[in-house]
Structures are given as structure tokens and as C-alpha cells.
Image (cartoon, rainbow, N blue to C red; front, top):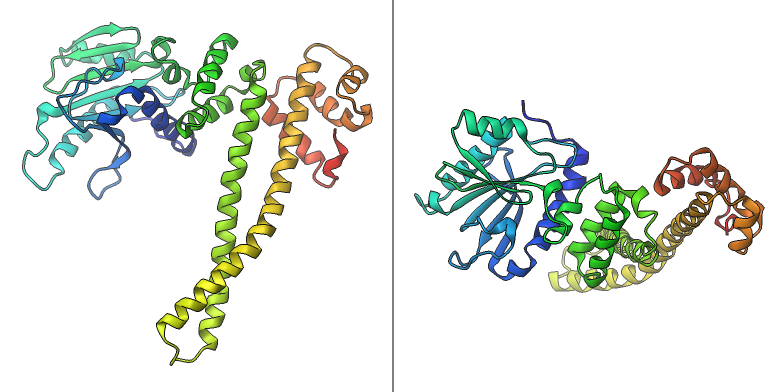
Length: 368
């Protein structure tokens, strides 16, 4: 039976994989077109990722794309999911449907299609089925990449945990089992080279969230963490301002429209609307900015404090020493210290949730 995708799978891993696959094919990006969750027909059927070569005669350099032809269907399984026999037939069927779902007959030749399955776990049952039932030949092309021979459509299986750290750093790191600190450091070093690229930041956010305890031990995390927090703040601020402006503008426009007579021309109405929108935007932006800034700053400050104190607690430092090193009074950080002592196994985000409840009715100046 097909394993059912949860809401967490859809919103958590798949967008990160879509960004990650574009990182993997960065050197071929000029010749490829990427589509996420390509809809098939009018029914709820989706291809996870569709990669289309802009010019079919230009080969893809990346190891996981050397099998590619013109149209390339990719199925992705999140780290806790598995690739089943039924998944194979589902995606194979989707690929055939994609070939047929065109206005002109045979405008997508079957010879121009490929299928790639991306999974963290080695799909032992599926491979046995392909060999014994389908009588296909499955051969390992290189670390983590298996080619399936015997079908008209070229097929490959990509097992991410077996991939090379050197060749596929980001795809291999898209997991909730990133336990080695050295590998997390490799990721941070590479991220520093692409910190302005939103694709890298999107994937890194997901990886950090899924492996928070590992990244807490990475010394280089401080600046990167603040960069991510800042980007989240900017995004949240922009969304909040836009929503508030739209709501207030609509209310004022409605009142203005009701008050002016039917004889007012469309151009006058447009002029009034533009004037109202500009005025509302200026006033709302200021108030929303102040509100969002205060909220995000408080959370950032608390998380940073928890992270610092947690590292010192793991070195068995007493409260008085930690307070002295942080140049603050013990009573100002004692509640964080106590939470950490009683929940040593929890991540920074989990500790934040506990601390935030205690601070709900307190002033944000009560810590550090």
C-alpha cells in the first residue's frame, strides 16, 4: 500500500528537496527548466519534480542527471518514508500519463522520458521485485546511484545516504540523521560561499531544523543563525505589512466608494484609491514594522541566550560562572538555567518553547 504523505512531509521536506535539486544541478541550470509538483490533468495527481532540458542535445554534467533526456520525472521520498513497489508503479503511471496529457499526439516521445526515484533508505524489496518479477537488471553506477536496465524508459534509483559527500553534499545532507559534526561543518562552509542564494538558505533552514542538536555543536553557527533569523524577519515583516495595507485599504476604499455619487468617473475613483493606498501604506508600515520587530527581536534574543547557556551547561559550568562569563546577574538567567538543567535532552527550539511560556507575562528585559 502506498505510504500516505503527511502534512509535515509536504510542507517540510518537499519544498527543501525542490530547492536542493536546483542546487545539485547548478552547473547545468542554464539548460534546464524546473517544475515543482507538476499537476497531471484535472485530478489530484502530481509529479514531485519535473526537470525539462531546454536543449535535448546538451548533456547534463551532474552525476545524478547523466541519465537525463528531454523530460525527466523525479519522485522524492522524505527521510522517514520509504520507496515501495507500489510507488514505482504509481510514478511509472504518472510518467505515462504525462506523456499522453498533451494536445498533439506523441508530442512527447517515449524515448525522451526518464524516471528518477530519490530515497534515503536502500529500497531492498523494490529492487528484488524489479529483478525477480520485472526481470530488470539493476546495477550500481556509482556511490548511491543505481541504473535500472530493461525498460524503454531509462530509470535510476538515488539512495541519498550512500551518495558522496564530495559530489552531492546538499542532497546527502537533506536528512534528519545528520549526526556527524564534521559533516555539518562541511555544509556550513559551503553555505558561506552561497549565502546570498535563497535556494541554499531554504535547504539549510530545513536541515538545521531537522538536526538542531548537531548544529548546536557547530561553532560557525552563530553568524549563519542570525542571517537566517534576519531573513525570516524580513519575510514576515513584508507579509505582515502587505496584509495590513490590503485590509485597511479595502475598508477605506469601501467607505469612499459608498460616499461618492454615481456620477464620479472611473478616473477620479482610481485617483482616490491610489492616494488612499499610499497614505495607508505609509502609516501601516510604520506600526506593523514596530510590532513585528519587537516580536522577532524578543524571540531572537531569547533563543540566542538559550543557545549560549546550553553550551556552557554541557561543560558542567555552574550558574554563577555562566552569569559571570555572560556579564549578567545570576537571577536574570536562572530560569533559563533551570529549564536547561531539567530538560537537557531537548533542542534549542524545544527549550525556547518552554522558556517562552514562562516569559509570557513577563518583560522581555528580564533576561540578559
